[in-house]
Length: 225
Length: 248
Image 1 (cartoon, rainbow over the protein chains, first blue to last red):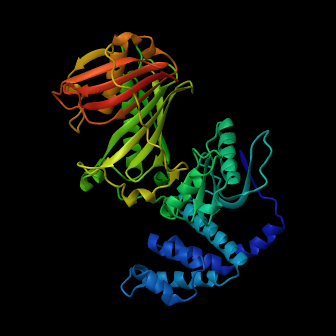
Image 2: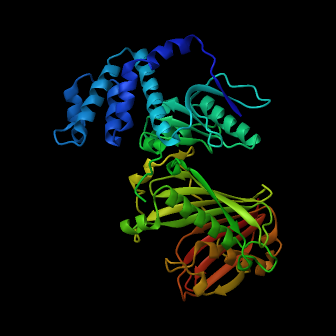
């Protein structure tokens, strides 16, 4: 099992420009230390239902109210999310995807420590034709390899990605290596579960990290223990 | 050193089959297999940040609602098994764990599905939101294991039991693994001695009410279809458990 840069194509070139946009980095960094309610706010705002801050202040009083905890961060998230929401449909979709990837990279890097965390990498296995699509995120530490695909919403979960993750895990096992493979979805656990229930592609063994469990990527347990 | 305990959607632990966990044939008892599955589940829970104290503080507990155990190949006294667990489904008040027991030679010996129900001691309780903050293995909602058997026929094999002290667990009733031994015992006594050591074979148990100390129990088994049906009831006919043993 070895890792390799994904082959750049026209979409990759365009998307690379979005990934490098300072707005992506700013929002991702804000979300990395955000609370669960603040992340919910970001998701709602970036869906683009309203461009009016008062609407969101009324809808999320416990996040944006005058006595809300970490209110400065919440306001900054709202501002950044509104910038994303103001973009056209296609650009908004690409920005949202890039933000989830950047956020995931920050969180995974906190857990991985000095292990290399890379973007847009393919995984090659002996005697197996390589997948066309690279993984959004990989951890390439020997013995602790991981491959993640990032999704803005549960609707992004499909047979292609489930098959790719399952294949990668099986090929790694055939080489007596262990590969953690999973989905990082900036959406609710229940939405992901419903979507997964509709899929017939193999999914057992695929880790699913949802908006509620993002902090686990950084190695934070669910509750004090 | 990095801490990725929060990401451990699957954990495994080694278990050596103790002398007292084997039958007179030298094979692993069903109760011991289920005991490993429960213990590794506890270990997983602790790794994820939910130790026993967490449940005690909230007055919550998991109870086994049903199991499906497939024994693929023999496991002998003193063998070491690697037993894994992962959460493979959940509902409002229930969660399913899947455990696999693999021998030192890498062969799969047993697969155990356990449907757990959360309770506050008096009634089913909704699984707290804290559990949403751990990643999950991709399957989500699931259909709980149900065991449907006909009424006990007049010619069924019958054994009368009273739970012994060593069969009780800290919750004050027979541990769920014990019921599997009781099933084996009554099926063998009813003429199914070969069925309880056949490979592969599958057990399905649905727990309805607990068996407590001093209770007089009627354990019944009879051939049904390609396998065996089993019913455990109190002396007054209250049903405690429905079970099946079938070729897998």
